[in-house]
Image (tube, rainbow, N blue to C red; front, side):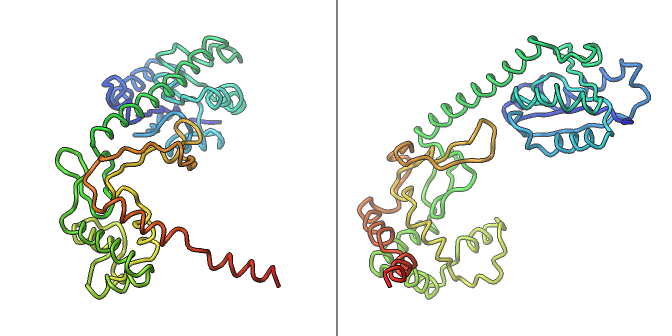
Length: 317
């Protein structure tokens, strides 16, 4: 039989703004509650904490560890501050409440909702519990839409929110994107060389001859050691150049909304059609002109695919 009482604590990024939802407040409430239950006095109390994770899915390390304990028969009881801490997806939460926990004989307690499965004698709480699931789910969806709207307003004001700017730019003190005096000239050189030569091989050779550090080497020189650049030797990757030459942000345009989540809270995304993208002109200082950008696109993105042509020729023979 299980001998663990699991105290589950979850705090998302948005929840962190509400003091009552802090990890410490949840912890105090859960421990105070479990101490008041005499029938659980002989059980081991364990904490499972997911800090900074959305409740709209179960892709959370601590909840997965907790559910593994349920499947192994180690967990006797799960206690949360409220239903939304466990999850905000009504279907998934309902599945665990109605199918999984009864199957493994796990007692589930939600303090603020005055819910204790041990008092329901096999029932799952009926319409009242289901209604609370739905409220949590709709709250999360509404919060997501408000967050996107606020983010869009900041983008329109020119505020850049990502921690990492594209190569050639840096983040100013007021949160805007501004040219990096060290790398902005390199971006212009790359685009100008692309028009003159028409090949990434020629660009790589020109950068190497000038001893221009790769983006990874440049970041490492600034203390941002994201990659092992010990063997790079100033040799730029073709894939890096292809991405840069296709990046319209260098013309001063910012593009957002290129991808959409498969579902709220999910990490899985899909690319939208370009007609659905949101483009904000004059968002930040341009490093190249629109004319230069279009010239490069004609040269690099409308050339025939060599592999495709070879395949077509084989089919013709």
